[in-house]
Length: 251
Image 1 (cartoon, rainbow, N blue to C red):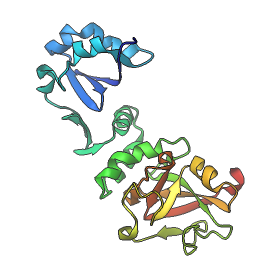
Image 2 (image 1 turned 30 degrees about the horizontal axis):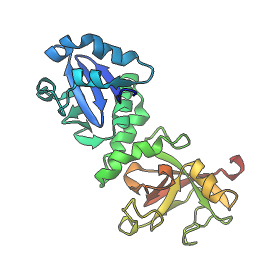
Image 3 (image 1 turned 180 degrees about the vertical axis):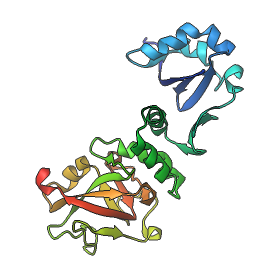
């Protein structure tokens, strides 16, 4: 039978190698005995095509327990506003997703200001769940982040720019559309519910193809309220957005 394999991701920074397996982060100080004894294996993790380790490699490096004592007792690493602590990725002491943490690590080196601005705006959101989920939503190919850190999404509307759900909101170009956050459903398991909806172009094409117009919107990260579990995570409920353009002719 094929040997069990453990998918992983890995980040190497000054003095620390971080290996992420099964949502646990193992920070291995390059001066520690763990690193010295397993240096060849640890360095090989950086150069694999499939980014997976075998059961025997997992046992050797991490062990059957959640952490080997030598790893568990290491002080959490910190680089500026980014830190890894107790298996969590933190930005300015707030937990964020592993994917956003990795991008922010690169952004600090490349001075990608829009990602850093996005993260700062995201921390203004009052819902911790959104703070950890939003960047994964953005990673849909046609959802982006503009130079000011706002999220660029799309929305299907009627031919006269009214919303499909209530027919009350004017989505003409230049309009800022707002709904009381307290009214917007925060439960991601309620897949069709109250709130202003935005999404990826793939979501628009699949569920509204040819029905009315398509507009491009920008949304402040603090105004995202929930990301429903259906639609492959390509739709979100928000409480405010600004209409940037009618892009019907481009889709």
